[in-house]
Image (cartoon, rainbow, N blue to C red; front, top):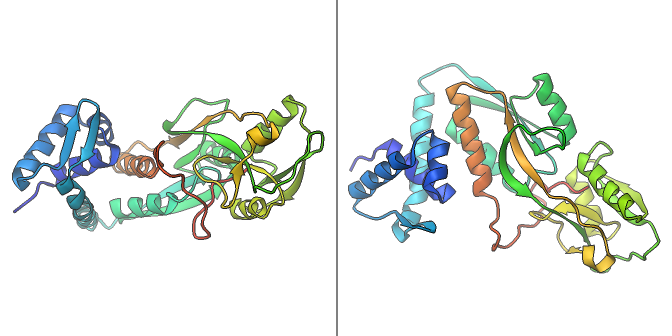
Amino acid sequence: MTLDVDAVRAFVTVADLRSFTRAAEALGSTQGAISVKLKRLEDRIGERLIERTPRLVRLSARGAVFLEPARELLAAHDRAVASLTAVRRHFRLGIATHVGGAEVPTLLARLSAHDPALTIEVRLDDTRELLAAFDRGDLDAAIVRRGDDRRDGEVLAPEHFGWYATPDFVYRAGEPLRLAASSPSCSIRDVVTGALDAVGIPWTQVFLGCGSFAVAEAVSAGLAAGAFSSRLVPPGTIEISRKFGLPPLPASEIVLLSTLSDTQSRDALRTLAMAFREHRPTASGARPRFRNSQMADSPI
Protein backbone atom coordinates (compact mmCIF):
# COMPACT_ATOMS: atom_id res chain seq x y z
CA MET A 1 0.00 0.00 0.00
CA THR A 2 1.32 3.44 -0.96
CA LEU A 3 -0.02 6.51 0.81
CA ASP A 4 -0.21 10.03 -0.56
CA VAL A 5 1.87 12.33 1.65
CA ASP A 6 -0.37 15.37 1.08
CA ALA A 7 -3.42 13.33 2.09
CA VAL A 8 -1.66 12.11 5.24
CA ARG A 9 -0.68 15.71 6.06
CA ALA A 10 -4.31 16.77 5.63
CA PHE A 11 -5.41 14.01 8.02
CA VAL A 12 -2.85 14.97 10.69
CA THR A 13 -3.74 18.64 10.45
CA VAL A 14 -7.48 17.97 10.78
CA ALA A 15 -6.77 15.67 13.73
CA ASP A 16 -4.65 18.34 15.44
CA LEU A 17 -7.02 21.25 14.89
CA ARG A 18 -10.33 19.34 15.10
CA SER A 19 -11.58 21.48 12.24
CA PHE A 20 -11.60 21.19 8.45
CA THR A 21 -11.80 24.97 8.13
CA ARG A 22 -8.78 25.62 10.35
CA ALA A 23 -6.86 22.79 8.71
CA ALA A 24 -7.47 24.37 5.30
CA GLU A 25 -6.22 27.73 6.59
CA ALA A 26 -3.12 26.12 8.10
CA LEU A 27 -2.28 24.30 4.88
CA GLY A 28 -3.12 27.19 2.57
CA SER A 29 -5.89 25.15 0.94
CA THR A 30 -9.69 25.00 0.90
CA GLN A 31 -12.08 23.03 3.06
CA GLY A 32 -13.29 21.13 0.00
CA ALA A 33 -9.78 20.14 -1.04
CA ILE A 34 -8.99 18.91 2.48
CA SER A 35 -12.18 16.82 2.51
CA VAL A 36 -11.31 15.26 -0.86
CA LYS A 37 -7.79 14.35 0.27
CA LEU A 38 -9.07 12.81 3.48
CA LYS A 39 -11.73 10.81 1.59
CA ARG A 40 -9.10 9.44 -0.80
CA LEU A 41 -6.88 8.46 2.11
CA GLU A 42 -9.76 6.71 3.88
CA ASP A 43 -10.70 4.90 0.66
CA ARG A 44 -7.07 3.83 0.21
CA ILE A 45 -6.82 2.51 3.75
CA GLY A 46 -10.34 1.12 3.78
CA GLU A 47 -11.09 2.65 7.17
CA ARG A 48 -12.76 5.82 8.42
CA LEU A 49 -10.17 8.00 10.14
CA ILE A 50 -12.19 11.08 11.05
CA GLU A 51 -15.74 11.17 12.39
CA ARG A 52 -17.42 14.35 11.32
CA THR A 53 -20.76 15.80 12.44
CA PRO A 54 -22.17 19.32 12.03
CA ARG A 55 -20.92 20.15 15.54
CA LEU A 56 -17.94 17.89 16.08
CA VAL A 57 -14.79 16.65 14.34
CA ARG A 58 -12.93 13.84 16.10
CA LEU A 59 -10.70 10.85 15.48
CA SER A 60 -12.24 7.44 14.90
CA ALA A 61 -10.75 4.47 16.75
CA ARG A 62 -8.68 3.62 13.67
CA GLY A 63 -7.68 7.26 13.23
CA ALA A 64 -6.37 7.41 16.80
CA VAL A 65 -4.18 4.38 16.11
CA PHE A 66 -2.94 5.80 12.80
CA LEU A 67 -2.15 9.33 14.05
CA GLU A 68 1.34 8.80 15.51
CA PRO A 69 2.57 6.59 12.63
CA ALA A 70 1.23 9.28 10.28
CA ARG A 71 3.30 11.91 12.11
CA GLU A 72 6.37 9.69 11.78
CA LEU A 73 5.74 9.27 8.06
CA LEU A 74 5.51 13.04 7.55
CA ALA A 75 8.62 13.68 9.63
CA ALA A 76 10.60 11.12 7.62
CA HIS A 77 9.33 12.62 4.36
CA ASP A 78 10.26 16.15 5.42
CA ARG A 79 13.73 15.05 6.54
CA ALA A 80 14.29 13.37 3.19
CA VAL A 81 13.24 16.48 1.30
CA ALA A 82 15.36 18.73 3.52
CA SER A 83 18.42 16.53 2.93
CA LEU A 84 18.35 17.45 -0.75
CA THR A 85 19.62 20.91 0.06
CA ALA A 86 22.84 21.75 1.83
CA VAL A 87 21.65 25.25 2.68
CA ARG A 88 20.96 25.67 6.37
CA ARG A 89 18.62 28.41 7.45
CA HIS A 90 18.34 30.17 10.80
CA PHE A 91 15.12 30.80 12.65
CA ARG A 92 15.39 33.25 15.56
CA LEU A 93 12.42 32.70 17.86
CA GLY A 94 11.53 34.63 21.01
CA ILE A 95 9.16 33.15 23.61
CA ALA A 96 7.93 35.27 26.50
CA THR A 97 8.62 33.66 29.85
CA HIS A 98 5.02 34.25 30.97
CA VAL A 99 3.77 32.48 27.83
CA GLY A 100 6.01 29.45 27.48
CA GLY A 101 4.88 26.43 29.45
CA ALA A 102 4.95 22.67 29.11
CA GLU A 103 4.33 22.99 25.38
CA VAL A 104 7.71 24.65 24.66
CA PRO A 105 9.69 21.39 24.19
CA THR A 106 6.96 20.18 21.83
CA LEU A 107 7.08 23.41 19.84
CA LEU A 108 10.81 23.12 19.33
CA ALA A 109 10.71 19.41 18.58
CA ARG A 110 7.94 19.91 16.03
CA LEU A 111 9.89 22.69 14.33
CA SER A 112 13.02 20.57 14.20
CA ALA A 113 11.16 17.59 12.77
CA HIS A 114 9.39 19.79 10.24
CA ASP A 115 12.63 21.13 8.78
CA PRO A 116 15.90 19.45 9.83
CA ALA A 117 17.83 22.04 7.79
CA LEU A 118 16.50 24.76 10.08
CA THR A 119 18.75 26.01 12.87
CA ILE A 120 16.52 27.27 15.67
CA GLU A 121 17.78 30.01 17.96
CA VAL A 122 15.49 30.51 20.95
CA ARG A 123 15.42 33.48 23.32
CA LEU A 124 13.32 33.48 26.51
CA ASP A 125 12.66 36.91 27.96
CA ASP A 126 9.97 39.35 29.09
CA THR A 127 7.47 40.45 26.48
CA ARG A 128 8.78 44.02 26.45
CA GLU A 129 12.33 42.88 25.76
CA LEU A 130 11.20 40.51 23.02
CA LEU A 131 9.03 43.14 21.35
CA ALA A 132 11.96 45.53 21.31
CA ALA A 133 14.21 42.84 19.82
CA PHE A 134 11.56 41.93 17.25
CA ASP A 135 11.11 45.55 16.21
CA ARG A 136 14.89 45.92 15.85
CA GLY A 137 14.99 42.90 13.57
CA ASP A 138 16.90 40.73 16.04
CA LEU A 139 14.11 38.11 16.02
CA ASP A 140 12.32 36.48 13.09
CA ALA A 141 9.29 35.54 15.18
CA ALA A 142 8.05 35.95 18.73
CA ILE A 143 5.31 34.39 20.86
CA VAL A 144 4.26 37.06 23.35
CA ARG A 145 1.35 38.51 25.25
CA ARG A 146 -0.41 41.16 23.20
CA GLY A 147 0.48 44.65 24.35
CA ASP A 148 -2.06 47.40 24.73
CA ASP A 149 -0.38 49.52 22.06
CA ARG A 150 -0.28 47.05 19.15
CA ARG A 151 -2.76 44.96 17.22
CA ASP A 152 -0.50 43.00 14.86
CA GLY A 153 0.21 39.29 15.06
CA GLU A 154 -1.71 36.04 14.74
CA VAL A 155 -3.81 35.19 17.79
CA LEU A 156 -2.82 31.79 19.15
CA ALA A 157 -4.99 31.67 22.26
CA PRO A 158 -6.70 33.77 24.92
CA GLU A 159 -4.89 34.17 28.23
CA HIS A 160 -6.59 34.50 31.62
CA PHE A 161 -4.91 35.32 34.90
CA GLY A 162 -5.67 34.74 38.57
CA TRP A 163 -4.17 35.32 42.00
CA TYR A 164 -2.47 32.29 43.59
CA ALA A 165 -0.92 31.45 46.94
CA THR A 166 -0.66 28.48 49.29
CA PRO A 167 -3.79 27.56 51.31
CA ASP A 168 -2.15 28.76 54.53
CA PHE A 169 -0.99 32.09 53.08
CA VAL A 170 -1.90 34.90 55.48
CA TYR A 171 -3.09 38.29 54.31
CA ARG A 172 -5.03 40.78 56.39
CA ALA A 173 -7.03 43.63 54.88
CA GLY A 174 -5.18 46.91 55.19
CA GLU A 175 -1.76 45.30 55.27
CA PRO A 176 0.46 45.32 52.17
CA LEU A 177 -0.08 42.25 50.01
CA ARG A 178 3.21 40.35 49.72
CA LEU A 179 4.01 39.83 46.03
CA ALA A 180 6.57 37.79 44.13
CA ALA A 181 7.74 39.09 40.76
CA SER A 182 10.06 37.91 38.02
CA SER A 183 11.34 41.26 36.74
CA PRO A 184 10.68 44.98 37.25
CA SER A 185 10.36 45.26 33.46
CA CYS A 186 7.64 42.62 33.21
CA SER A 187 4.60 44.20 31.59
CA ILE A 188 2.18 41.95 33.47
CA ARG A 189 3.67 43.10 36.76
CA ASP A 190 2.47 46.61 35.86
CA VAL A 191 -1.02 45.25 35.20
CA VAL A 192 -1.08 43.52 38.58
CA THR A 193 0.21 46.42 40.64
CA GLY A 194 -2.05 48.79 38.71
CA ALA A 195 -5.08 46.64 39.56
CA LEU A 196 -4.17 46.71 43.24
CA ASP A 197 -3.53 50.46 43.21
CA ALA A 198 -6.90 51.06 41.51
CA VAL A 199 -8.81 49.49 44.40
CA GLY A 200 -6.56 50.88 47.12
CA ILE A 201 -4.90 47.62 48.18
CA PRO A 202 -1.34 48.27 49.33
CA TRP A 203 1.36 45.87 48.20
CA THR A 204 5.01 45.15 48.74
CA GLN A 205 7.38 43.14 46.60
CA VAL A 206 9.07 40.64 48.89
CA PHE A 207 10.62 38.43 46.22
CA LEU A 208 12.27 39.33 42.93
CA GLY A 209 13.16 36.18 41.05
CA CYS A 210 15.52 35.62 38.16
CA GLY A 211 13.13 33.66 35.99
CA SER A 212 9.81 31.92 36.36
CA PHE A 213 11.07 28.88 38.24
CA ALA A 214 12.35 30.92 41.18
CA VAL A 215 9.15 32.93 41.55
CA ALA A 216 6.98 29.82 41.34
CA GLU A 217 9.03 28.22 44.10
CA ALA A 218 8.65 31.33 46.26
CA VAL A 219 4.87 31.27 45.89
CA SER A 220 4.70 27.50 46.48
CA ALA A 221 6.76 27.98 49.64
CA GLY A 222 4.18 30.44 51.01
CA LEU A 223 6.52 33.43 50.94
CA ALA A 224 4.28 35.55 48.74
CA ALA A 225 1.31 35.63 46.42
CA GLY A 226 1.58 35.89 42.67
CA ALA A 227 -0.55 36.30 39.57
CA PHE A 228 -0.29 33.47 37.07
CA SER A 229 -1.90 32.38 33.87
CA SER A 230 -4.72 29.95 34.62
CA ARG A 231 -3.04 27.51 32.23
CA LEU A 232 -0.21 26.80 34.64
CA VAL A 233 0.00 27.58 38.31
CA PRO A 234 2.56 26.58 40.95
CA PRO A 235 1.93 23.26 42.71
CA GLY A 236 0.24 23.37 46.07
CA THR A 237 -1.43 26.74 45.46
CA ILE A 238 -5.04 27.88 45.21
CA GLU A 239 -6.81 30.81 43.59
CA ILE A 240 -7.20 33.49 46.30
CA SER A 241 -8.99 36.42 44.66
CA ARG A 242 -12.35 35.69 46.31
CA LYS A 243 -10.78 34.69 49.63
CA PHE A 244 -8.95 38.00 50.02
CA GLY A 245 -11.09 40.31 47.89
CA LEU A 246 -8.43 40.88 45.25
CA PRO A 247 -9.39 42.65 42.02
CA PRO A 248 -9.94 40.70 38.78
CA LEU A 249 -7.09 40.78 36.30
CA PRO A 250 -7.80 41.63 32.66
CA ALA A 251 -7.58 38.88 30.08
CA SER A 252 -5.15 39.11 27.22
CA GLU A 253 -4.14 37.19 24.11
CA ILE A 254 -1.08 35.20 23.12
CA VAL A 255 0.05 36.24 19.65
CA LEU A 256 2.63 35.11 17.13
CA LEU A 257 4.56 37.94 15.51
CA SER A 258 6.65 37.36 12.41
CA THR A 259 8.32 39.20 9.55
CA LEU A 260 8.97 36.01 7.54
CA SER A 261 7.42 35.76 4.10
CA ASP A 262 9.19 32.94 2.21
CA THR A 263 7.32 29.67 1.77
CA GLN A 264 9.58 27.50 3.94
CA SER A 265 9.51 29.94 6.83
CA ARG A 266 5.75 30.38 6.59
CA ASP A 267 5.38 26.59 6.72
CA ALA A 268 7.53 26.56 9.84
CA LEU A 269 5.32 29.23 11.41
CA ARG A 270 2.18 27.22 10.65
CA THR A 271 3.78 24.22 12.28
CA LEU A 272 4.64 26.34 15.31
CA ALA A 273 1.11 27.72 15.62
CA MET A 274 -0.49 24.29 15.27
CA ALA A 275 1.80 22.76 17.88
CA PHE A 276 1.01 25.57 20.33
CA ARG A 277 -2.76 25.25 19.87
CA GLU A 278 -2.62 21.48 20.05
CA HIS A 279 -1.07 21.57 23.51
CA ARG A 280 -3.44 24.12 24.99
CA PRO A 281 -5.60 22.47 27.69
CA THR A 282 -9.30 22.22 26.89
CA ALA A 283 -11.85 24.13 28.91
CA SER A 284 -13.10 20.89 30.49
CA GLY A 285 -9.68 19.28 30.87
CA ALA A 286 -7.43 19.27 33.86
CA ARG A 287 -5.15 22.23 34.12
CA PRO A 288 -1.46 21.32 33.83
CA ARG A 289 0.80 22.17 36.73
CA PHE A 290 4.42 23.15 37.14
CA ARG A 291 7.01 20.43 37.25
CA ASN A 292 10.69 20.93 37.82
CA SER A 293 11.41 19.71 34.31
CA GLN A 294 8.94 22.12 32.72
CA MET A 295 9.25 25.76 31.96
CA ALA A 296 6.98 27.61 34.34
CA ASP A 297 4.36 30.00 33.07
CA SER A 298 5.66 33.31 34.28
CA PRO A 299 4.07 34.86 37.34
CA ILE A 300 3.96 38.54 37.96
